[in-house]
Image 1 (cartoon, rainbow, N blue to C red):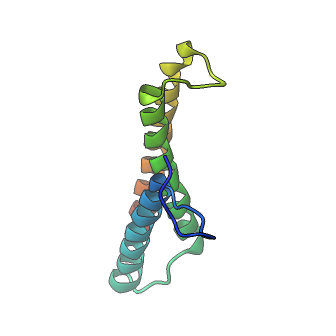
Image 2 (image 1 turned 60 degrees about the vertical axis):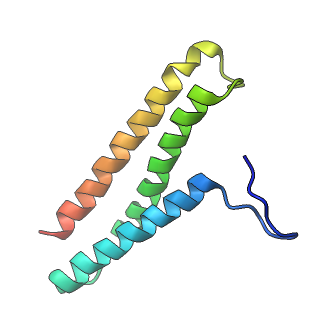
Length: 108
């Protein structure tokens, strides 16, 4: 799946764009909670964790969609079609848990 772009520009994949938009929303929410409510500076480690985990969430969704809809999942075998979405689901669960822990710690 490619997005048409002008000459000399790199295409922005939809999953990357979705991950960055979700990351921006969560980072702004985190800064608002931490800075406005608690009157504390945002933790840079938490900001990195939010960006990385939201990207992992969109990649988990991508893994599930590609494993179900793709005709060829090379270099994997057809038996792996069952396990690839499970790996994507596990990635989503772990990432959502990390986002929850960041927000839970920021409201203490």
